[in-house]
Amino acid sequence: MAGLRLGPLLRYTDGSRATVWVETDRPCAAEVRCADGSRGTTRTFHIAGHHYALVPVSGLTPGTATEYEVLLDGTRVWPPPDSRFPPSVIATRPEHEGVRVAFGSCRWAAPPAGGKDRVGPDALDTLSARIAANPRGARPDVLLLLGDQVYADETSDATRHWIAGRRDLKEPPGDQVADYEEYTRLYYESWLDPEVRWLLSTVPSCMIFDDHDVIDDWNTSAAWLAGMRATPWWRERLLSGLMSYWVYQQLGNLSPDELAADPLYAAVRETPDGTDALRAFAARADADPAAVRWSYRRDFGRVRLLMVDSRAARVLDEDRRAMLDPGEAAWLREQILEGRDSYDHLLIGTSLPWLLPHLVHDVETWNAALCGGERGARWARLGERIRQRADLEHWSAFPSSFDALAGLIAEAGTGPGAPATVSVLSGDVHHAYVAEPSWPGRAPDARVAQLTCSPVHNSVPLSIRLGFRFGWSAPARALGRRIARHGRCAPPPVRWRKTGGPWFGNQIMTLTLRGRSARLRLEQARADRDGTTVLRMITDRELA
Image 1 (cartoon, rainbow, N blue to C red):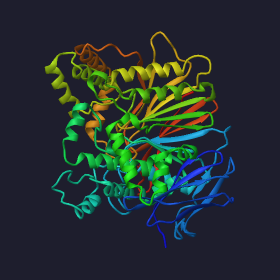
Image 2: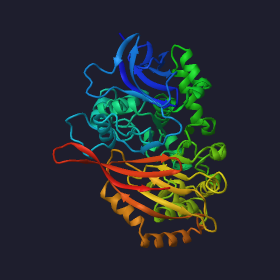
Image 3: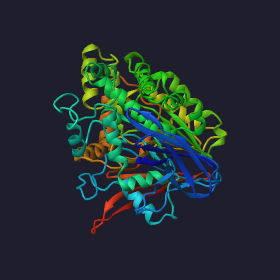
Image 4: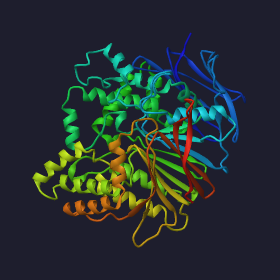
């Protein structure tokens, strides 16, 4: 009898359709059966010894929430008979109602029940517990996971012990993940967490990778990449990272129509073993990043979400360095400007913040100028060493891309048909803040904000707390201007100020968008004296 290894994950939803992702322990027919009579079924596909299905469900009634079950070869496997959680539901949102978008990034897997959690309460666990305690109460309409869903380069004690049973940890890459099978272990460790498993079964999710899904500071520069490619283990790590990301995250990001038109999805389903087809796809993405698009668009009524790949789509050649390759940049522009009067709110999900503390921004633009040869070859060599050691690889480290995004956001937010808000949603930097830009000589009609929230569950060392607090200060801003002058850097085309934060802790942000109004809430996971965890409200403010 087939068993459920992982999932279900409720992924795509619209007014009448949904997709539900599962991993099973053998080939089978996977079925989702809803209480209202709607259902969907599909056969599993096979990748590297593992079996998966993305079950399409159709015939859902808009504006309803219907309980569902998962059956494998006709036998019910979800919900478990001893489940302590409410039934999982598929909720379809009427287009005229508001949208509640929760987001965050950087979730290091929580330890098993009873284990000591050295990084504090998990914000997703805590969100799950709150929803489960009041299943009819307010809940997110969608959960955006903005990167570092798994940590391939920072494994837990349990995973290191498991890896040691497969290979010698003295050989590179040591206790980091080496291949596809080890990636599957990371997803099991993260998504089998009971609270997170239930949460992902009942709240739709959209995901995009960041660096730790592959390796810290992935694609920092051409020199960084050349160094990695010279190692004997990098190619297998990268291909396995992209393959597992496609299976565990990217597939569920796509709509049923996009899946139907996807030749790779058709290929892996039509063959008894799709491993070779998927591996060839990953190899093509490695050889020519412009050949593959990981970015995608989702519309929720009059809210448009663009999840942007700010890792694999980079151009690393120093003379044409860009965060997005030309095709990706053109795609982003088209998606933002197409039918601009059809949405009231634009959300740009990019794992890396666009607007950073001014000192960090100036140091990164200065470093980019040095590496580009502005101060000569000697400074360029020093700049590259600084870039790699100090992790200088955000939007501001790609000045032309930073400027282009500033111009595009201003264009999108100005004139007839402009949305009420444009929000750049990010994580990565292990603190939360709100920053609001302004453009000298022009004032967009939309309210524009950089909304950064991380981590969901990870450490926040004292050095990060002190560094970012200083980075936002007036003295740091003055220091940054002096550094930028040394690099002969032009002033950025946009100014910005911090209007909230910095906040440190395991946390999650929620945007509530209704009509042309927008409200932001930040909550942190805190432990009460009795050991229970709750989400404490840190800020609750109107954006528009």
